[in-house]
Amino acid sequence: MTKDRRRQSLVGEVVSVKMDKTVNVRVVRKIPHPTYHKRVKRYKSYLAHVASIAPKQGDIVKISSVRPISKRKCWQVSQIIRESLKLEQ
Image (cartoon, rainbow, N blue to C red; front, side):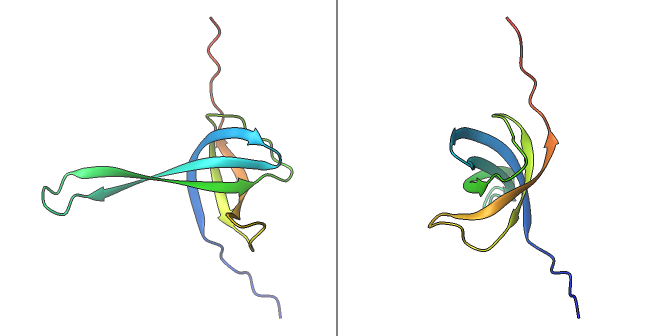
């Protein structure tokens, strides 16, 4: 009796990698403005656990929900969708 549970997942950009085994991911939503009906951006940051995947700052990653790991951390990085480009100067 194995049921595959569909976990909630979000896509966002890695903002900070300064913590140990944790990254800060910024997720952007576009919603219509209630009065002007123009699409406006809304941002929210999530702390995500990093186990085997090591994303860098600027990477686009997919995070999925897991059981709470700490007070603010209940997401885990599941895959790196696009790596950031480092411009050499």
